Image (cartoon, rainbow, N blue to C red; front, side, top):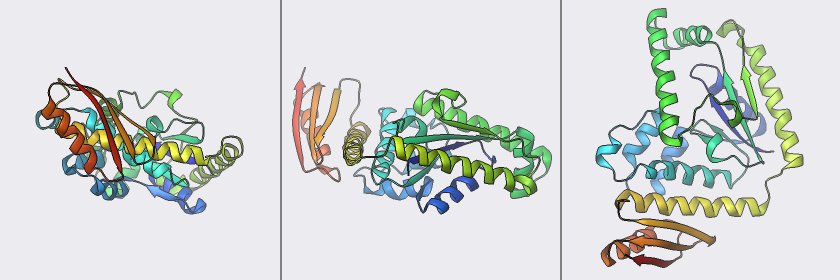
Amino acid sequence: MAIITISRQPYSFGDEIAQEIAKKLNYKLIDKFIINNKVKDFHCNFSDELHDLANEKEPGFFKHFFKNPEVYNCLVQAILFEEASHDKIVIKGRGGQYILNQPYVLKIRIMAPFNVRCSYLEKKERVNHSLAEKLLAKKDHEREYFIRYLFKKDISKTNSYDLIFTGQISCFDHYKLGADLIISTILDYAKKIEKTQPLTENNKDNLKRLSLEKRVEATIKKEISSEHVDLNIGCEKLGDIKITGFVADEIERNKIFKLAQLCHGVNSVDNQLSVT
C-alpha cells in the first residue's frame, strides 16, 4: 500500500477516519504522540518545540529563544522521513502533505462545514454553542497560521492534495455512512498508487538518508546562529555525513563538527566547511 497523509480540519471527523484507515490496513498511525517519542532520540532538547508542534500553534516564543526558525522545519522533516522509510504508515496532520510530496504518497484533505464541526465540538467537549463557535474559530486560525509559519503554505490550496473530501454530513450521529464512503475511496486510491508507484527499496534508503540529513541540520541549527553560517548537509551513504559551506571562524567550524558527531545514526563526518 501507499504512504497516506491526512490533513483535516478540526472536528471534521478526520481523526476518526485516519484511525480507521490505519486499523483496516494494519498500518502505523503517526500522530503528535509518536513524534513526541521519536524526538527523544535527538541529541538536543527540543521539548519546547514539541509542545507547539503537538498543539499546532505558531511558536512565537521561538523567535526570542532560538537562533533559527529553520530548526523547527528540520525537526518535523527528520521524523516524518524516518517513519515513511518504514512504509505502511498513515500520517495524521504534521504537514505531511508538504514534506512527503512524492508520487508514492497519497495526500488527503478532509473538510466539513463550520456548523457541522461546531456541532461535533459541542457534543465531544460538552460546551454550549456560543463557546463552541469561538473555540473552533480559534483552532482553525491557529492551525492555518501554524502551517503558514512552518511551511509557508496555505493549507486550503487544493494543489497540495490528491483527494479532497468536503462532506455535507448533517450531524455527528449521521456521519458514519459518509465516513465509510470516504474510507473506502481512500483505500481504493491507495491500491492504485501501490500498483503504479510502489515504494521501492531505493526510495526507503533515500528517505532514511534525508531523515539523517535533517536530524543533523536541526541539531546544528538549534545551537549555531545562522547569521554567519551557510552550510549544507549531505548524506550519500547512510551514516556518512558531509558538511559543506562557510562559517565565521575555526571555533564554530569545530563546534558544528562535534554536534554532527553526536547525532544518533551518524557514523562519520566529513567536515568540508570553509572559514570566511
